[in-house]
Amino acid sequence: MINITEVAETNAMIEKENLDVRTITMGINLFDCIDGDLDRLCGNIYNKIRSKAGRLVEVGEHIAKSYGIPVVNKRISVTPIATIGAAACRTSADYVRIAKTLDEAAGSIGVNLIGGYSAIISKGMTDKEVIFLDSIPEALAVTTRLCSSVNVGSTKTGINMDAIRKMGEIVKLTSERSYGTESLGCAKLVVFCNAPDDNPFMAGAFHGMTEGEAVINVGVSGPGVVKAALESVRGESFEVLCETIKKTAFKITRVGQLVAREAARELNVPFGIVDLSLAPTPAIGDSVADILKEIGLEHPGAPGTTAALALLNDQVKKGGVMASSYVGGLSGAFIPVSEDRGMIEAVNAGALTLEKLEAMTCVCSVGLDMIAIPGDTSAATISGIIADEMAIGMVNQKTTAVRLIPAIGMKVGDTLNFGGLFGEAPIMPVNSFSCESFIAREGRIPAPIHSFKN
Image 1 (cartoon, helix red, strand yellow):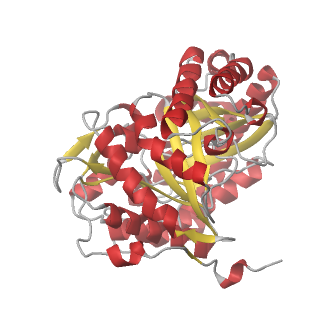
Image 2: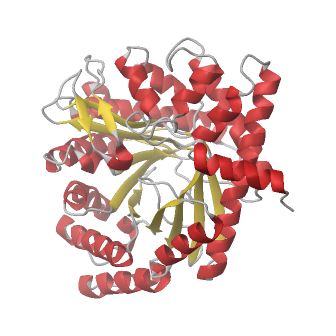
């Protein structure tokens, strides 16, 4: 039972501290859409998405109105398209045709984004998957709602360096192809190690191979709520600090659990997971960086930052796990630069560098996220940055990701402005020394010794 005090607390979180349900995401299995004829395949995909998710936006808005809980985004994820399209696609243009179909289906329903233009190539690539990768820059340039992700490594299989070399080139081409839209295509493209099957957050969402026919996953967020709670215990011990974060995370997750159950019931689709992630937005007061400052740092990037982030991430997970039997996805703390006003300020102050962000990703939820770099950065250097982050994920048995935006025509000191959810990003300096000979090697980096558990 929820008492009147908890109701009042939740209302305050919503009205004053930016608590929201970041997304209701319906995952849809497309395996039964597979056909060797491209026209029939696209028709099957369009009809399947429409039939399963036709009421998603309506239900999300109804829940928001009924409970007074903002449901910011309604999204769809689908089975990785590299697999679904393999039988029908002969060229990259064929895959782009599927991309347009996905975008049209999402638009007809009214969802914000659709994910799953994806490939799982952590050990090797088929000929069709290579064709799929070549389609990504064009697919993201000619669509508005489509998001793409590629998993290039795992703790079990190692790191596919051939795929990483290819992805460095793809990121560059995506930026060039979306020139004139502030390289927005790259903001919808993420490279993973150990990608989870049940991630509702874009750009990395896809409906996992182990999932059922359809599922409802919910992502909740509340950096402002956590910061407000910590203001009341300023100067207290680490024990008090940790207990406060855990209790707050519990309350946030209960809100997500409620919305997830209601959405699943109204749509007659199984409930999957609640992803409790402190995912910031460009709005003032909705910043993970501000939480780190409340913990005691002048700016993120100061000595002690990695320890403070590790503490925050762990306590958020501990509180969330107690509030729901099914917590999953990328639960913890996100540190995207462009989407977090406090992170932007730290970069502009000179406190936060790419190398420090990489260190922080060892203990946060994902990785190097929404980071703008000079447009003349080479494909090999981008591949090297991706490889470093994938190695962190592989060795530490955690999900890591990279979302880099080479800003064509821009240099360090300039600012890339996406607007909306993606915010703005100061162009960060990149180490200028070459890694081309390393990236040019073929094959894969073997799995670490601790992966052998069978």
